[in-house]
Image (cartoon, rainbow, N blue to C red; front, side, top):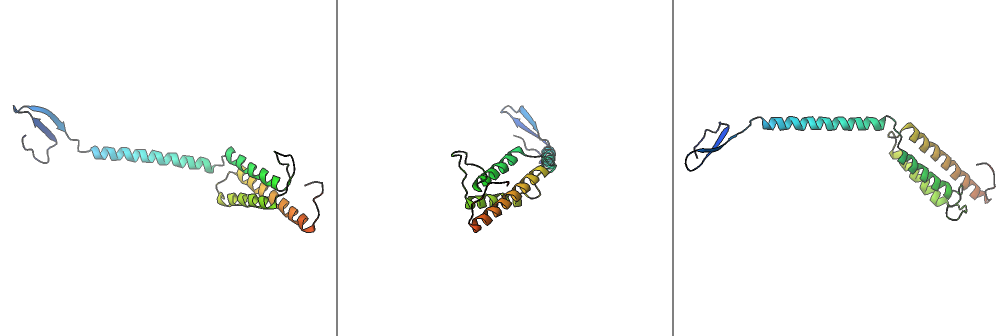
Length: 153
């Protein structure tokens, strides 16, 4: 092989007869091109993330979240004796279970504050208000020692 100047951009390989087998040209700005491609990809990724966040913050209601909240609310109503047990058809009162479910929904409300659509926020707030009022009514009835009579709730 012949010696080349360090600043040259071509490499040559010679065979035994002294002829050149191949030439390789080194592209000096390949790193700059790769860096530019990475920057473009990162900018596109950031734009997608911003669009995704904007879509979530714009008030899009998530039906899965709504079903989750309604399911917990239905369980709490069942624990308050407001709905019959789907397996037995009996109404059972379990203040401890009701309190745990109400507290769980309160924690969900606290942790999702500012991240809910208006519909989700209203559902959660109204449901918690209703459950808390019924829980207080149940506690008052229990302290008076009287059973809950039939009537509007």
